[in-house]
Length: 382
Image 1 (tube, one colour):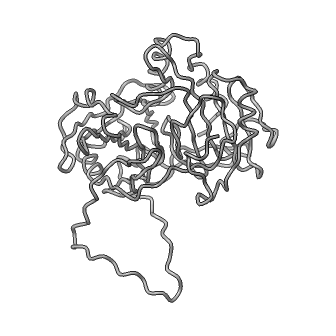
Image 2 (cartoon, helix red, strand yellow):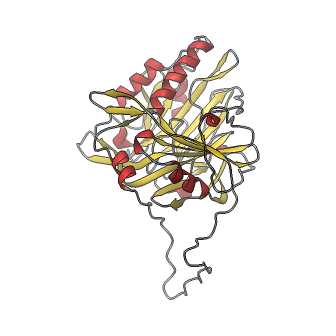
Image 3 (tube, rainbow, N blue to C red):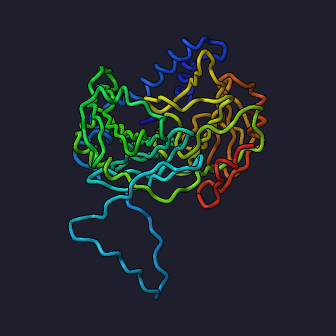
């Protein structure tokens, strides 16, 4: 389906609270955006729903082949019918590192870590086939991964299970947890029925929780998600990387999120990178969900800036090349030298467009299509 970025940006702009709003206004707008993000529409015949019901398969891992003539490494002995148990999961000790390792359970696949914040890390839950289609300005069709939901692991003491505990008790391996089935919330004549999310929350270690969320329209059972959760695997701890570096950052802003998806947990795609900056300290405590703008602490709304690299086919505006430009207040863009990708800067009304242009004029891009050239997120800011 066509994805009109201009419409989305205008919608986001109309919902975003101005910095001078009260915290009650900010929280109300944030709750509205949370509901919009969480209400996944089940369009008749949509890939996500059909594949979730009919059965989905893992996306294959790409592994390096052995050099010609060299013997293949010996496989570790595995008892037939009994796959090796996953390692006990522990949250990474270092800031802005991730350790969720991609794995498959049954008909679902969990990706590697795609987003990291000071309080949690996120992986995508994927199905087979294609996800949302986008038609570019030349009429060519592009597809995102078939993302059905997400798996989030929270740092110790970051998650408050008070909402999750209202669900039905459900064990996940040897751990206790809670299951909540998604419910139909309404029907749109054009989009079909909307559902709340189906979630499974469990305590993977003392005072440390994980949550799987998928569309309620997928009709995934508690047993399905329990098996997926039990497969949570701790891989090597790796620094979060992004494909651009900000040579200039407005005073007082520091890194608060980075990865290959944004705070809305949209489907990662080739070349996508994301960085969120906050001015002030946000306490990642007593969370009941992942965090999205506005970031309110007491009666104060923290200023936020975000920067995202997208493939050029996501763009719906005529662009003047590498020169930063701002088609509307607090939204500015700049293309890579080859024109295949662009970086979007969102100021939220907290800084001027001149400041955003200054940031974009001081961006250094890695080879967007080669993750080996990407920057550690912690060294990519200022």
